[in-house]
Length: 494
Ligand code: CS2
Image (cartoon, rainbow, N blue to C red; front, side, top):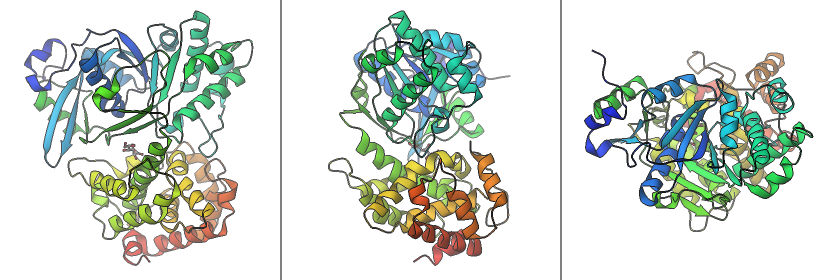
């Protein structure tokens, strides 16, 4: 017999300590969240539910899935309930979260999402849509307008892109006189608040009058774009994770997520329409999130990407297995200490090296199965803020970013699609076609590959590509990786 699904009715059979902190349906909506992926469910939804339990307020979340219909169907069938399981070597704890007051599928009903953004009860919009959905050139942040986005910004048909949904929603909100609102990027973009503000501004300019008439001025005065740093390791759910959640709950949960116990959220406190008391759930509200963001992007995500590329090349399935490659952890510690630590001003009182060590410990959590190819995807969108900014800062200071260059070389070998043992590696990246086209025309030598990929101007700025020191470092590492593979390269690393 099929197991009962998680639902309001099924909560009675869920163990007491695993029940939601707020009665689902007891709070009104105040937040629209775009991107219903695992990360949102294990991060902002948890913080918001805890804030609601501690301080009240109508700050329920209406979750919008831009594309995936499956998660919307699963949550609808479960009365919008889902569970989060925190796992570590020390054990596991599962809890149902009651923060979602609604779910929508944007691809199926974009007009409903536009109407929500214009609804005066909604005063905060949060986003976890991944880097590529912003459609900004990763190196410089320029809006990339293709046919879909052009139609969203200048046509009449319902919007199909994230910038299109946001801009059409803001225009509708302005026309409705619905009051101020905060748009909060929770993605791993550099200066994510500023990038989102710039996206909205570029898109409104592109739309131009009469479509966006008046909206730009209104946005300048009534819409805030607080910067944030978000952190929790939450891999895509595995069948085993779903089975474990069902066992803990006594009910099947097709929207269950599993993550590490650790979590962090730093936000700039700029919410003109108010906000939940997230600080009651442990979030840090600050004037300037930039130092936290740089710390996390460079010392955590940069290392994560490095381990993902090197690990995948060496045939390791998960990040935790990759870290057991002899010499890799030490190379990552040197990457942080020698290249990352001096590349920016960390938050007061924070040691970048200690933070990096803690991140490595978290990556080594034996209960988290984070696949190397998952972290490796969309590299073109991630490399600038995770690694290239470190390289640029080192060069500006006259330093030699040896380890950061290794990460770039590992990415270049990874995108060629063959692991050290000859197995195929997937290239899941919005620039995959461009990358393949460039590689196909290049001589199959390390130098040829570096030249071809450095020509991707939306990833590698001209100044970096023209830097002979950087080029030589990357070419040397790529030569070693091609010749000896990851394990022998790390073994013989200087
Ligand atoms: C990872 C992140 O997939 C990736 O690119 O580096 O999702 C990482 O797990 C989170 O940013 C941790 O907060």
